[in-house]
Length: 219
Image (cartoon, rainbow, N blue to C red):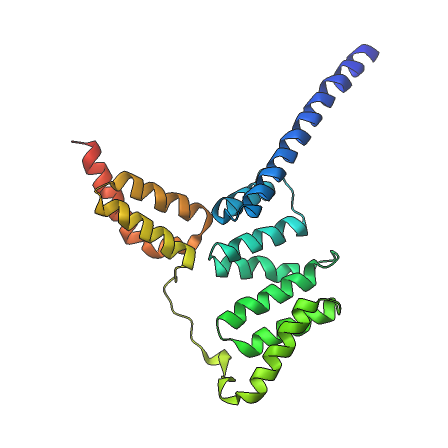
């Protein structure tokens, strides 16, 4: 019995080290893709850290949100930032609230943006970026009362609206279609859909590509 237990212990240690090595490599890959501004792959790599490696940490989710934001996937970024505002993780809640404010400000939802900048400061009074954003926006709103709209009355459209990333991928697919490279166009859209659900806005286009590819394969 003693020898069997020792054998089991020695066998499991290399497995653990191998897992750690693979995880560290995945972390390095995600960091590299973000630093190189390869935001599409940064999204994929950070999703892999969460889903494949179980690294469900606020820092990983914040980097994923930043990757979404820089990749033009604004709605995914907002969904990822929001729960981070209430976590207990150093400066992450303040940073997340500030970024949420930036996204809402870009959408001209100024009062909501101002509220998030205020939240960022409450979470961390030393967040100078949030302080700057709050003061500039508050001052601008004071001199532009006509821009203080009733944002809650804005109606959401029933149809899924494509993100900037989805639009960019559709444009790339259109270029392939113009060259009669339907298979490559289909691959572009399928890969984009893996990380951005708003690509489904172009579902009819994707279905059309699938039909063309099926016809070509049967020739």
